[in-house]
Length: 151
Image (tube, rainbow, N blue to C red):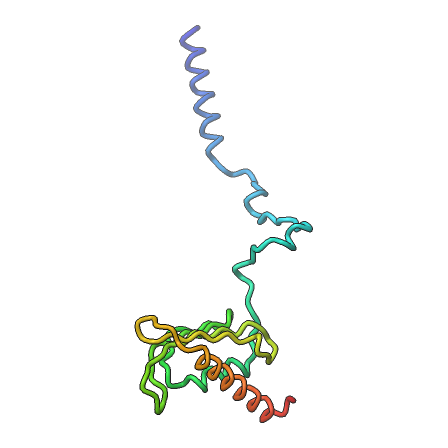
């Protein structure tokens, strides 16, 4: 009888083990994504969703590409507003530059435009040169907006 009970116990354990591995039951926790509840403290946190995009001003975007058309484009991301160029020499200039432009706002405003210039070997560029490029981009963007009749 002991031998029969041992076989029966082994068969039941084997059956229970196989049934546990079947996975045919419904698991609602996996099928629904967890939603995080926002709190008051979320206003002060610096965490942002990686899927959020920045709306960019099309006039600033196009003016940046037009004014700096002598620079080869390395990467463009219209969803984040970033334009990264390679080194190039401006017409009539002797020094090469590379630029990084960020358009961060949908408004046609100087605060929405950030220009960073770099000389060969990572050398600094005079702040007056950076300001002149920013002014040229802003002026061209305003001209494009007036031309479109949206002023």
